[in-house]
Length: 407
Image (cartoon, helix red, strand yellow):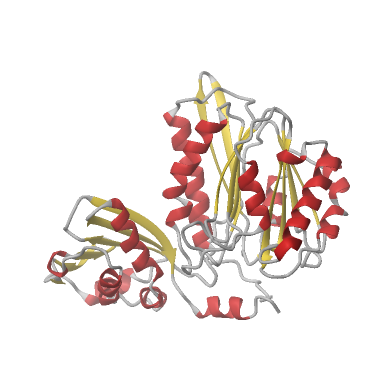
């Protein structure tokens, strides 16, 4: 695997101070799944009565643990629950052996932590196609179960990283009926990032009281404009998992728009952090499309721009080559009228109604492209649809990391 020593230039200054979530505790261990000298297994324990919602990759080659989680999400139980995550090996494309590993791990977590096997959710991330040495994970379960702490969420974020250059966390707190409701989340993800969802593992915890069905509806809807609206390299992983757990230890948030907005904000911040850690990334880019035939059409066009290697390499080279944006719009296959398209880089109008803007100055756009955070806006002028996608540039660093990934 590539030796990643440099933190992304787009990383935040430090891991945030996340609130403790009543009813959740964490532990980590170094099981030696792939890496040596670092933690690679994370356990999160959820209090009795917690409800769990989720969203997962729609890849046709999704892993055994994703399929197992999908089967368990939504089942009603008042029993405690557990989430067990390993990094270094994705347990994907491992045939029947993958199922055997999931069953062995979930049974062992059940025994070690005194939770029903039906309430054990597992995730694996890392290299595809190699058998998971699940015995190494099982060997550290007793230690994990005996050392959980509500204050160890940062350690949990560290343990789930693969090619990530920094751990990712986000939180929100709101007041409901005089009680503070807290949300805290962690994520991993850096490459193989594209909608549906990405090579991401995301775990969000809240002390809110809410029915599983309502939480699931919130998560599914918010997912479309957060984790399903980012892309690093257009590749969809076999292992994407978003798990949201609510312990019910604080206020009832049923029907609360404020809670819905707070959850969305945490999901969006984590999604943005994944892009900011895109493999080799030096630019964070927001692609906004308006005037599309529909929102769905706008989403496709925004993704076409965001995923274009020509657009992404121009951004890396700080070249305001708006012709590449025009190209990406045209190749999307969605309705567009050449003579109605307008394009902005930041607040600089570079193309107006199908032609270069008479006010456009190349030197101004070139200066704008030197910024780390960039915005590209397209108005198609053909309908009411709009969409926003977030991406990053494409540099030689991406090649270096992925060419050496398995070594």
